[in-house]
Image (spheres, helix red, strand yellow):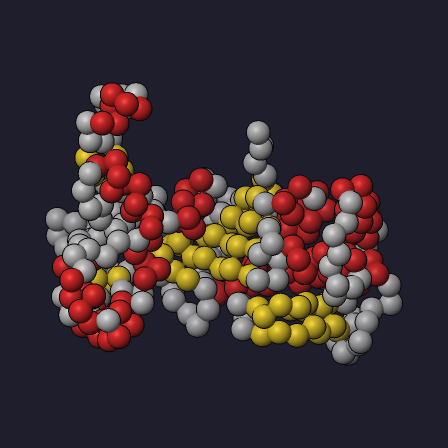
Length: 312
């Protein structure tokens, strides 16, 4: 975006005083000033050097990458401002918020971060844990002691501990793909609440009556263009490793899609540097986490306990 603005709208770019992220908006309102971009959300801009500078006074300090800034636009460092750790206390709210909205005199404004880093913090993910959100699209969050960027996934400075990192994996084939296999059709129709519940009960029963590892049958179901990896295909292999057009029964198909999705999450997380250990926890959230049989597949694949969150 910065490059496009600088090239195609140079006058507008030149008049631009400050460039901020949406995550800084509320902080700007509360403090009455430009709020700095935090390390974690700033990591997603491809402009921040996520490696520590080695500064003696601030060992976890991060700065903008000069080469990237120079390529994207003149004077970009000044427009972006100095990035700060996600837990930095910025200031007290400006006066109107105390009288009009009842803010306490002790209230302080902390640098805001983005939705994905906030999810890592909200899930109480710690080193060795993996957070898995099962929604329309699936998301995986992992706490990493060191950064190992690859050709897929995203690495952020950890919003909770700036000496560590956060790995993020996003999958476009999540709940909608599970629904397509559930309904045995590519045409998703609007169902009544009772019919929807009935079909999920049948889906769950299919998982319940098939064994872990699915008798050696495995499938890859990318009905939508997948992000990790970049592909769109449907592949099935039987116990002999032979390609098949369809499995012998619907229950095998259901387990194949769930086990395939969960195994992919573990494999991709490990390629980012994640390691399962004795203290590993899987923290599950999202609509799919309500299904106990899907959680059991998670427990089998990660060989550990799975925890969900009480929702009010």
